[in-house]
Length: 369
Image (cartoon, rainbow, N blue to C red; front, side):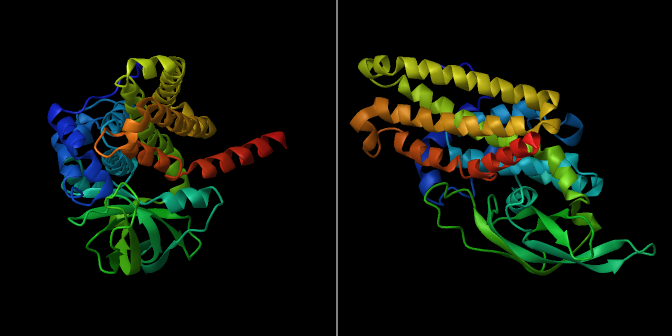
């Protein structure tokens, strides 16, 4: 068994997630319910300073909380990750007014926070251009831009709740200014949310496309003026919280092996012990790097942890399938089929494993040169 300490959900939330995990994964029935239930359990406040309305603790505590939810439902933990990552943006943003205005509603689960920075991550990795553009509209007496017209589209953002959301996105500036990050409210003119994407799983995650056409925002909505520097600052939390999804899913799959027959457990005992030990080592490396800030100056070390955790999730879920045998291929006979679908998503969530491996290869080429 693994010994990684996860932050336990409340008994009520755990029971609700276990009872509805299949429906959360395959239907949109519970899409409105996930965020309020996470908030009611107090999970959104973990790792947020008390003076900011949180319950204290560190980002590592928040990662463990994401892992705790992922052990019951990856879709719910995906929503949790998006919300908690957006909260992290506001905690790091120099825009105090934006933080004061929106943080209480985000922590209470009354407003959804969507981290639409997938395009930004790919842009900074030289994979694709920015898909969002900001054109100056008004200036102050010093010549500084105070209002912008925003255009563009993002094909995939999670946690765009129909009940209300605020999304982060990185914008190129056509006046030559550095790319910046804006918070986009759902009810601003020109903001259009698509229908939910036709995903094969994670269907209650409120995942949709977002389009902006002539949306006008001012400095009150700017999360960061220098987007590349800001992303480098928040990346350990962004990826660390994301890794919590892998940790929780791998943990639950390995625990499920213990419920198989004695003969099956004995047959895979060596592999179970090896994967459990590796999960502990990778989790410890992740927690240590996030807690002590070493990933700020060594992001490739964090990339390597994310890559290895994705491989471990795949191995753990395959081991669960192996130990379950034919029983696991029947509907209603445990969560093995769902966790197989969930595991298939881990490598492709941005930054994907392919993108991270590309970054590592570029880093090694630079070092060799």
